[in-house]
Length: 117
Image (cartoon, rainbow, N blue to C red; front, top):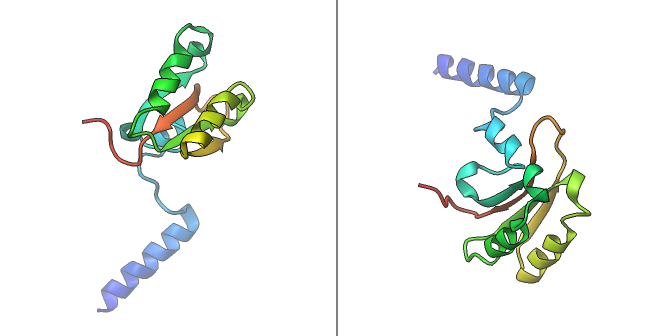
């Protein structure tokens, strides 16, 4: 019994010093706070200049699996159209602050469950 209480005390001390361990932290950093397996579609900085990205976003927002829209805070003004669409559809949305070097993802449409096998 004493050993178990020492382990739990040790766990508490480790968590208080290092913080709570995060599952797949790098993946969540890239996809604006969600897991890749939940991503229906996403747009990168490079794709913003291409044709057809708007149609892709709207199709993903119309998906029955779509539950959340995540937008990189550096691109809020360019993506406001999609915030409006998400709001009309009753989807949750978040504006996520990320350092430029941590991700080139601008927008993510995500489900609340895994959409990838």
